Length: 196
Image: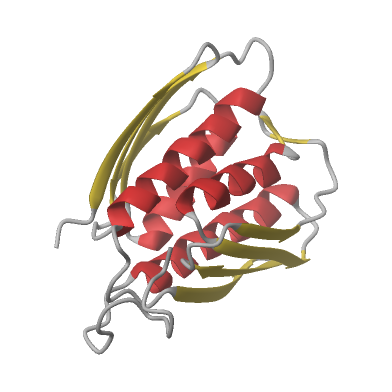
């Protein structure tokens, strides 16, 4: 089964190419022009065993909004394509990940129904060169395009770098679990017979 996708998105604000292999080894090359955002996407790739290449050129002279949101759109689209008809996948993934004093929960359902529940109160407006509020925008964009239900909750934390790191690591590990193929599952894991 070839669970890969290539997505290119070009607007007046961004130019993005995403290459995704769901059955990878956590190898990555990520360049968005936002160092801390790159660092977080690397965490997702490594912890999700995703082979992930992202190259984005955006209007960072304005702010980080378009680059982060459009990366979420392109990555979510790549997941939607790579998952195909979603037959045989576990569908659900859930992880609680500590990073020093921080603790984050992520639960995902590749249900075909986009919904984001996000509760991560950062205590600073910027983390490195990333606007902290854009983390939610990234996950919202991903959720809509990947057609998944995603719950993210920051349980505790003091250091904002650690808080974000715990979230993106939990996200990667939950994806790995949910996208995994289970030979016991015949067709989609749903009594409806479809996951769309």
